[in-house]
Image 1: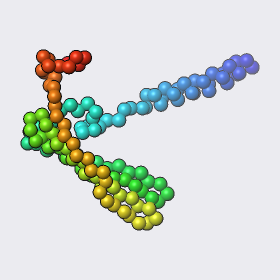
Image 2: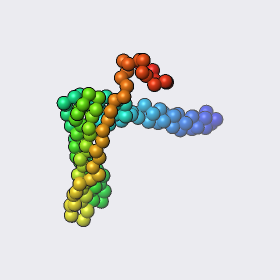
Image 3: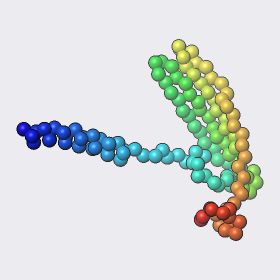
Image 4: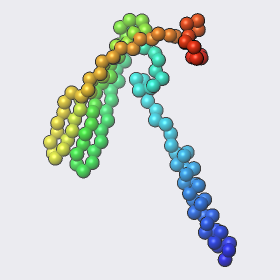
Length: 127
């Protein structure tokens, strides 16, 4: 009878351990390319465009809210990029749909340092 009690304690513990291991192994980090990389130090090449489409939304109980749009980047000068994010927000509630311009973002990215330029590297940055 003591072996049955021991088995009764070991099985739930083993099941919890295996469940935790399965969850840990199943989890992966989200992958996204530029411009959604936080590590994207590069700028768009001179005279070139980068155009990305995006969409996101949530829905429940017959209603839906979301946004969709374009992220436009243009290389206006060497190491200078102009960016505009142009979203459309929309919602569907009680059979009615509403849409309009979302929060427009306009920005500029300028590259100060290149990895190859070791002489002017800020302290603490390594190749």
